[in-house]
Image (cartoon, rainbow over all chains, first blue to last red):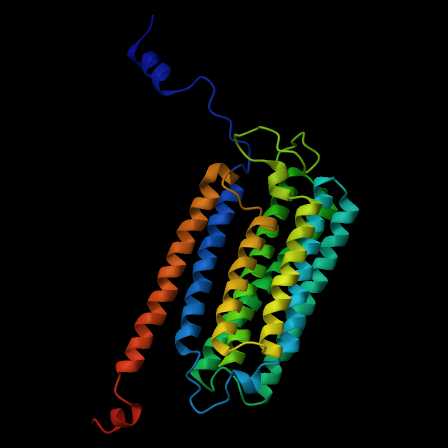
Length: 206
Length: 129
């Protein structure tokens, strides 16, 4: 006996629901988060672009920026990108020790980057070029500081994942998390390309 | 993500659906190429600004071009962006973001530049009361 309900079920419910493994949409979701983060940075870049020439009688980029230091900083971030890549390759091969090692090196490069940036910031503030000095410096500290904050949280995340991998190994969930952090970390390097080009290099040309 | 059977990053096995594990992780060669390109694309703009072999305008245009190329290099070799990732949705989200970013950046700079150029000088503002 087939009732109307049975017919409906046949029509609207598949016998076997399409298989969505756990976390199958995580990477796309995280990518869309990164795109929204990209919009935040775009707005900060636009703010810097508009305010970047308003010195309010204070010092300009030429007096403040130290290009060799920025070059060192840039190479720190670039090196951390490639070492994270090696961590991902080690993860693909299922080598836990190598993954952990490369992650640790990545974290150290990240810390070096942060250290140099904080040194630069403290140097600027010490010279009387703090964020409250001019619109140029306010937007500079906001843009570069937001990037630095992202790197800071990236390092916190990295340490968290290293503990996770140590405790639970390279289980699928941890692999997925490491891939999300990989996107995040490389994304921050892409943002840094914009920062060193538009803030530091273009600043020196003014 | 899942325990795929492709252990290596080479060779595009024809699984057109879902995700490609090897695409998501990249290969040693891919990372090496990306890194070398990035080093070159970073070093040249720094050299251009520090040594100043060219006029200011040309230098500015060149370093912006280098930045754009390096961003694409990072997208391809480090973020493993391609037209097939996540069934094409990643690249769609990326293109949408790029369009919004370009509109927001060029619009802000254009509008605010003209506003600055057409606004009355600051000294006069204080005497308006």
